[in-house]
Image 1 (cartoon, rainbow, N blue to C red):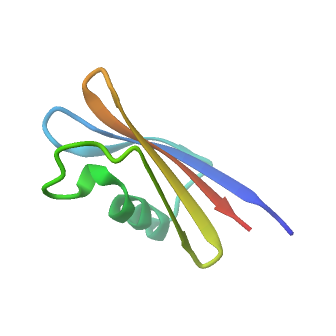
Image 2: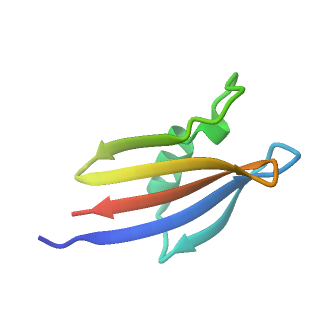
Image 3: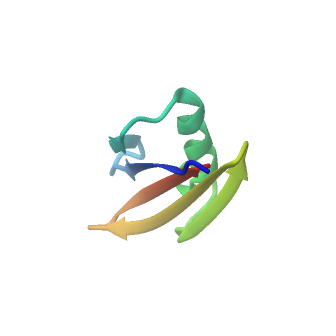
Length: 82
């Protein structure tokens, strides 16, 4: 079994824009869409941060940890592919 790990950091700025600030080694467009669909930074009507979300698709586990840093929310993502 081969295990591959990918990481990223996504932040929401003071204007409400969601920015990809760090990705290692790279994320495909499909993976980026999956992160954006599952992270609470893009959900409408959410007033508080959902601290941890995980999901699985096509033998890929996606772990999303959301936290507020300096009053700006940030998502740290870990994708485990096997």
